[in-house]
Length: 322
Image (tube, rainbow, N blue to C red; front, side):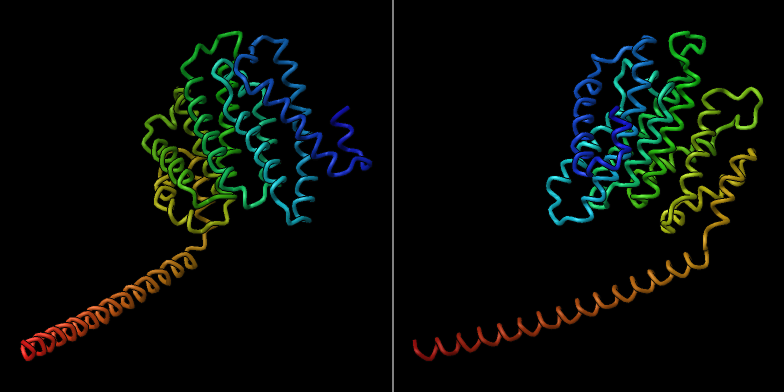
């Protein structure tokens, strides 16, 4: 009923926001606590229904919130709403230890959709809060993906291979969000260097018997490349240019193509021209600073000479009256 009510035009934007906040508050109270999570099948089915509802509520609720936000100068109350949204998504991206694998195995697509919805409505003034949310989500997803490969793949309670694949999907949503919304943040460079660097150094990318770890590493590398293709920051692409060039030389067609698509879309002449202009501006500023320093030293020397002369005259004046 909640989801269908949100689709009704009879419900005002303010009412949708109030209902969304209530749903999010209940979610954080119930599911934000690890003691309430269980891996049994009955709870999992209930959880699936919850994700459907919360996705619909967040989608409609954030459309209403964004509309109100764009038509008011009073951001204080709206900021608290955006903060609650970020807290909810942070909870989704950092599942409790006793339920971390099941969440990725069964709900990765829902989490991916929710992250995309939130980022599409989030105002720029809140990007700074979204950065740690996305970075922590990406880091946790990478961690879980590799952990799942070390588990017993025949465990009937948790499909670890499915969880590893789901973790890669969650990583993609978080890393792509960083590339699109906050491309200059340190996390993008760190994750790119880590994942592409480790992939380039891997020895079994082409092996038919490649280890699950290697397959996961390859999937993460392709996710990085897909995310980099969506960024509008040429500065980011210039920064990872050496890694992308190295990636085109690995013995893996999929990775070579992924890196090649990024390189093919880069405007290198524009990037080189921009870097040259920056270098020239830096040189000009350095010369200006040097000239300012020289002028300042000359002024100091002049003032020092003036001070010495005044001291000399004061000494003569004092001797005449003694």
